[in-house]
Image 1 (cartoon, rainbow, N blue to C red):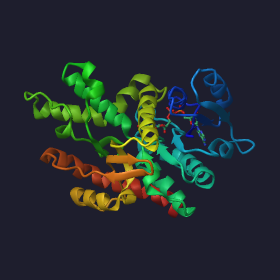
Image 2 (image 1 turned 30 degrees about the horizontal axis):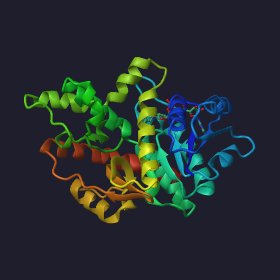
Image 3 (image 1 turned 120 degrees about the horizontal axis):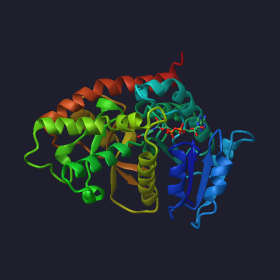
Image 4 (image 1 turned 45 degrees about the vertical axis):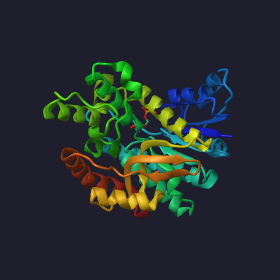
Length: 333
Ligand code: NAI
């Protein structure tokens, strides 16, 4: 205890994420699954002198089931990444089916595990996992998380750059709420731990917001067809997984943004829906994580008029993304 599993472990995100989890002393077992290369990745990682016992499986001979048996936390970075010119929604066609099949494996083999979804489009793949779990009668909204941590990590870094002091980046926190794609990514800069310079113009603020919303495109463009963010995503995924592991180990007061089902904390979820003025099923906000999963969904609190405008722009897109994921399972075409 605890056993962590990575599904899609041989990929651009999966390999460095598996490395970071193997380096984490809280992990005692690490299961790696992919359709290629996992025995090699597992053999390689197994030589690292940390406690976790590593095993890697491929699909034949019940590989998915073997990987998931006994899992406490499952991280899913399986699927195709973006190429230049693509939106995250363009990935839906391929990744929706991959996530559905992996979720089915989790629902039947490790239904009580925490599930952390990285595969894009997160706004739709998280609803897919929820629907698959509902179908199997094992859905616990407290244990399902869309990983939006990369947006939070980027916001900290970009704010530190604006402040001209990158050494502050690790301590800067910016709540990033909404969802995980383009305009659904809403950084609440007014609630950042470190205020922006008073000389900061609204033009400069807009540029910063835009950079946080579309930061992923900088990487897609620089990689020029070779994929999207992998190393920074692995870092962010490991950060989030570590928070869950610490909460499971009994640490109190762990609060971080994540894209969750709003019934995970019905009272908090209802209050949040009132604030955003929409009856959404999923939304990313600061959540408190306890040993059983989400223990509290935090409200947005007092935000600026500009931030309210950003939320208004995010809502219709989120509604469509959620519906697309739900319908993929409920009403497949
Ligand atoms: P990649 O192509 O390098 O790796 C994906 C891996 O998934 C490959 O090893 C592939 O063999 C594996 N895979 C494909 N089908 C599978 C299946 N049915 N079962 C198990 N494994 C399977 O892609 P990369 O760069 O690692 O990205 C993975 C996903 O993460 C993409 O959907 C990408 O858009 C998403 N992503 C999410 C971010 C976030 O902030 N949530 C940030 C960056 C990427």
